[in-house]
Image (cartoon, rainbow, N blue to C red; front, side, top):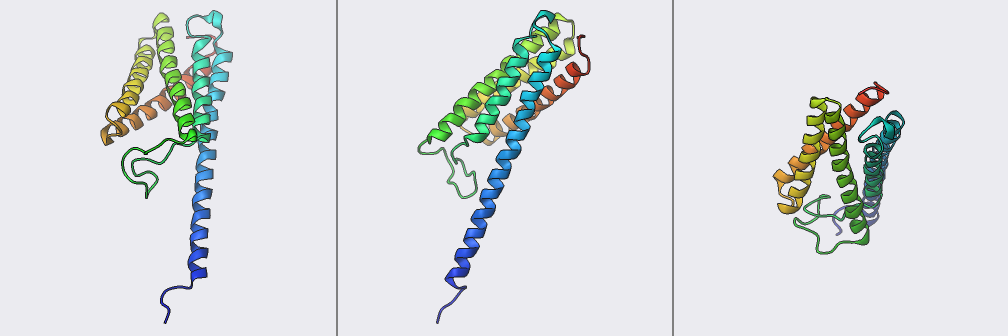
Length: 191
């Protein structure tokens, strides 16, 4: 006597689950690309408001924000390899090998992150020259904290504290970029 559901039922159930997971991955990628394109739009807006003749950071600041956005779009397209229990069911620890997609993900994310850090420092210098100490400090702290936490992920090999600190740094960088855009776009032609 046979026990359990018929084989066709379990196969159909498994196919539906896989289809839901694929749809969720695609939706997540599309949402990520959409949000990262906002950085590119921010860079375009900053470039229009800040002319190179306006002083330090007028040319390179917006370019680096744009490189960050474009790099994050590329990082979303080329997904990282499963590692450290993510997604669920993946064994803990680093992957035994890196796929070419995972390699491209790390390369473009690295370029993007360094561009963001450089943009923070360039805008910090621009704000300092304009006498805007608060903005200069905010920009410097954001860039330094982001760089330190990104390095800590590699140095501490994915320790939970490093991952949490990096998540906080990402939130700080998102806040910095949003506030920078609101500040600059709301005050064209003035510091």
